[in-house]
Image 1 (cartoon, rainbow, N blue to C red):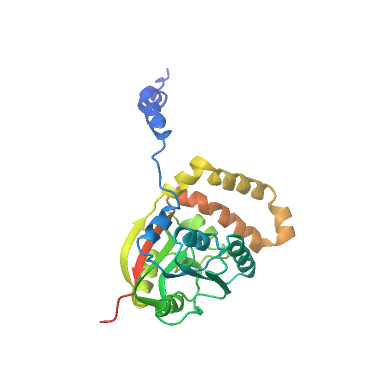
Image 2: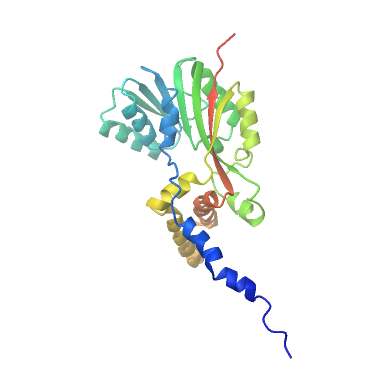
Length: 274
């Protein structure tokens, strides 16, 4: 004779209010902060008539928003990718800010500014892709005025990212393994001459904020499913390297949600000379 079911208590727990109540609680928003919090952090360090540098300005959207929020400042954008430079210049013109902003194609290692002339540096999601990290930081340090601040947003690897997942992310064309390690980045800050004034750990808040509104992670998962179903065709069309990069990139938002990547804001200060 059989012993009969031995997991009835567990099944009653799984399908009863002990767990259901938790799921109901998880359906309530925790009112997460969104990416606009960076502008609020920046505002604490931007003074009247300041010169602001967006290091890696991409399409210029953030620099335009900074100038909109601070009507007396002037801006400089530096961006290495030509298509982004064109879009940034168009965005500046469309916003009517051409008299207050200049956009330059170049890298953070050669900022077109005099020493000690920049009052604030905005650097969002850029430093992890700078291959000569120390050289780039030293150049930013050079152009910053004494006691100026640099706001750096980056996402770093956590202990949850390893094995096959890490190997996949290393095939991302923008991945620099040292730079996505937070201790390495913070050592580079120190060697370049900066002091870390403040650290803000974002966790999953921005992902929650976005998913509650526009579902970007759901879109990434849908794209990933379609990518894998068309693997052979896409590899034949664009090549294995592009396929591998897109596969890794579509995991990025998901890994932020899962805590495999850790978004962190550092506010750095260039100390005044003694």
